[in-house]
Length: 111
Length: 111
DNA sequence: ATAATAGGTGACCATCTGGTCACCTGTCAA
DNA sequence: TTGACAGGTGACCAGATGGTCACCTATTAT
View 1 (cartoon, each protein chain N blue to C red):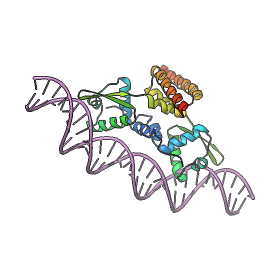
View 2 (spheres, chains in turn yellow, purple, cyan, red):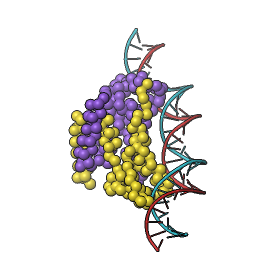
View 3 (cartoon, rainbow over the protein chains, first blue to last red):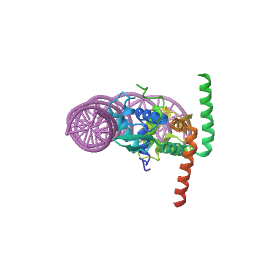
View 4 (cartoon, helix red, strand yellow):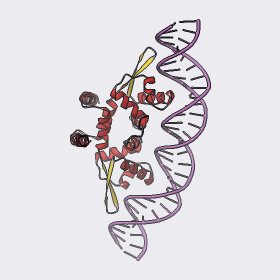
């Protein structure tokens, strides 16, 4: 009878939605964006985007800072790294990252 | 109009469930387990566990091998690493992993 | 002051998802 | 060869989730 619903539950739930992943992609490229700016890149009402950003913030994947009437959004990579460390130990990491990097190189080379 | 539903959609959906994460945890400790063995560690019917394993396999997080009437399950770390690489670049990785490792050490020290 | 702008809340509905069951197939041992 | 065991399918139901809307607050510029 394991303790289901681990404390990272919010992180995984947050990542489960494609729109939220897209938002993280945008913030990965450049963060400090406002809700309105992010909204303009999505075919969705402001409310939908707001809801998604709230989920990301609740999961700690996005942190925010208020500046006047604007709210700036920043990507926080820590929870992502913790996911990684949960199922990839130091030994496996070396093998897997090498494998992935090689695969990426090959694909870029042929593209 | 971005292409929502990226090709990793199945991976993130698979990770969104606490039971499936628990299964990955068990396989991380030791893989090559059968459905029946995994089922015995969960308060759920065999069918529920089977459904979860199917999702994990469909996402490529678990790979299987048949052996007689048994089906053995193995953890595949590659999709996890790809999640990592999507939002953590080489430069950030050094800083974040150092930070996380430090935090882990401190917590283990005080525990 | 006041209008425009940026952000926020709670309710609501269509759809997806987790879990169970009745029932079926393939493999092993006595 | 026949019973027990490991795995598998399709339908079904309760609850969670994504997205929208009507409506509200706070900050800025004229």
